[in-house]
Length: 130
Image (cartoon, rainbow, N blue to C red; front, side, top):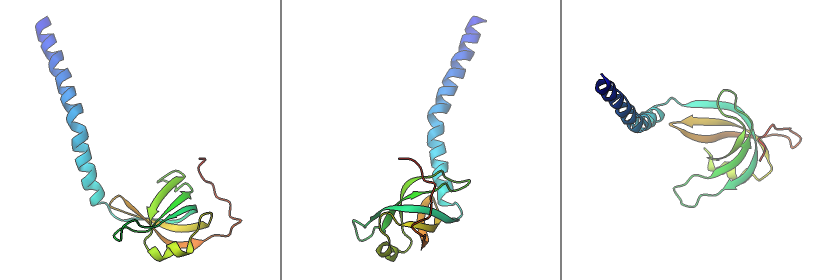
């Protein structure tokens, strides 16, 4: 009986190790599939302060902006992020310290900052502490 119980325990432990070792790879594979096929989402009227405009290093890169953004309800807490601009021409109108409102587009796990509007300098933003 002890040998049977030991064999059962060994099989259960080995099965758990196998599952733990293989699950992350499967989960990662399925996660990638899900992101590529995810529907586009738009989070409107996100408010932020410009930290830096990041010029592209290569011709194929998009111009990006580093922002301190407010909480995006039911999606993301307030934080600092660097995200590409949908329209690179927007980079010419942005400078560090500007307060803006924009639409955050998300498709296939990628973000784009679009439809940027200026906010008055007196606008109070609820940003994350750094």
